[in-house]
Image 1 (cartoon, rainbow, N blue to C red):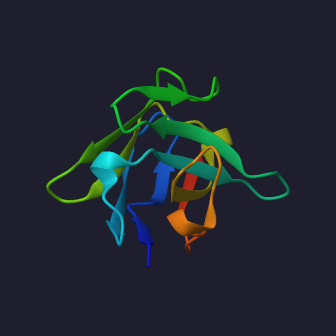
Image 2: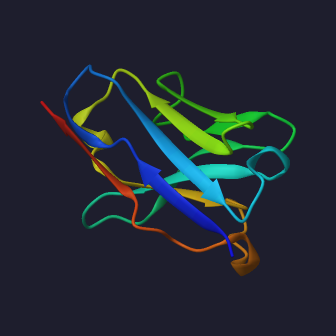
Image 3: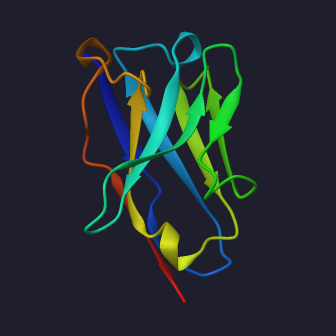
Length: 119
């Protein structure tokens, strides 16, 4: 079965940086599309970054230029580098395979990792 475990969240001041990690098992990161979602209190879950199997990336307008999604195939791990953080980035961040369709065979929602940005 697919398991994705997020880590690296924490409390940071506005303007700071964090790197989130997504350790994968039961799926090969290097041959699948991967993505990061986030969900803030009282808001819908939002797709913020996508990395395709071919290595191209796409970002939500709200994070473009500040966040970078990447992978380490040897570690079977996906990352989200978050720079110039803003209070509105505060959310629980989730990693998913098949990020556009969210098909069940590619996994399900995990526990996520909390990112809190203070002003």
